Image (cartoon, rainbow, N blue to C red; front, side, top):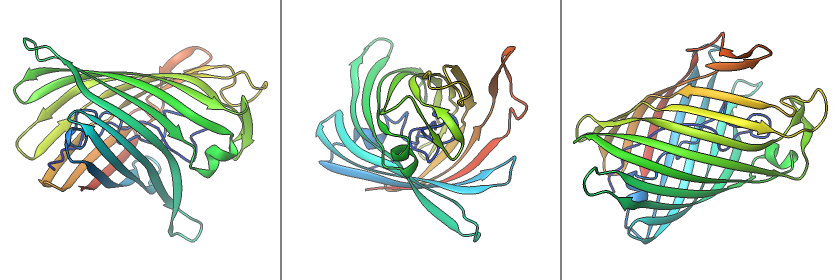
Length: 286
């Protein structure tokens, strides 16, 4: 199975998932509906990926690791189970692992294809699994999302993708008091991703997506973080991946953080715009 990575990264699973969706952690599988992993006709397939991550502003070092196992029951349909495991520096200085949230995902690739323009339509449905300690403590039940992906060829080696992803968050309560204080839980989020995917040669793939989201938080209690607010987020996540062989790939990526922030005067460019995280990608498929 040949694997070229489309590493568009936004949040699915994180120790801080209940406090701030869509801001600090990636969902490394988000735009892979047309990847060779999804296209595999093997009865069973999977992937493992490690992303050593350096925060360019604070100098922090973490890793963001993902796993996925799936079964293809038709040529262009796949059901999979996956999730993430993070590591960060503990007081001892060693990297301490933390289990992130998981998911169950159904993909239906190229439901429609226009023979003239080459435009394809794919879809994905996902239910989040509250596997992390933080999400369970916050009373998270699940996060339900449905995505529609449009892809159109620009040149023989480049296509442009657009993804629309509404997400509904389900919690036992409207908020809770955690390590970051009293927080209101999200109720709805809409994410939009768009950008080119260029195959530079047989082994190199470049993605350069722009990612925008807006999240609606519940009305929990006065003074709670994000209480009864709409919070926008904008990021740019270029990534270059090298398919070493059919089962192993390497890459390098950059993720901006805090590009826009919401203030009393409105949404403005953040003070740290352009700062972010540099990631190295090591992955295998089977």
